[in-house]
Structure formats: C-alpha cells, structure tokens
Amino acid sequence: MKKVNAYNFSEKGCVFYHAIAEDHEQAVLLALQAGFDVVGMDIELEKEDVRDEMGNPYECRIEDALVR
Image (cartoon, rainbow, N blue to C red; front, side, top):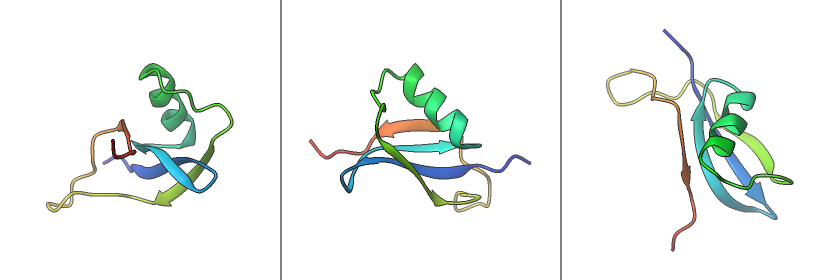
C-alpha cells in the first residue's frame, strides 16, 4: 500500500495550494502539471500518511486552497 502525505504551498504565511502526494517532488510535479505557479513558494509537509475514513490512502492530487 502506498504512503501519501499532505503538503502546503505557501507564501508569506498564506497557503495557496494544497497537495496530496507520495513525496515533495511529486507535489511540485502535480503543481506544474496543473499550471500553478509555485516558484518561490515554501512547500511544507503538513501531515504524513494521510488516509480517508476507511483507512485507505488518498489519491494524489493538488488543488487551489484560496477561498474566492
């Protein structure tokens, strides 16, 4: 079973994107593939081995974290 982690892409304390990825490099790759500009942002590990209510690892993805 794979292990996925939660990452936050932030700048000046504000989280812009949230990723679920197997590692830091995959989080950056997901951001680039989605067209998100993450150059200069801090990438911080939020939580390791994230799972859903049934105990299954989440699918890898990235999403916009800003409320618009």
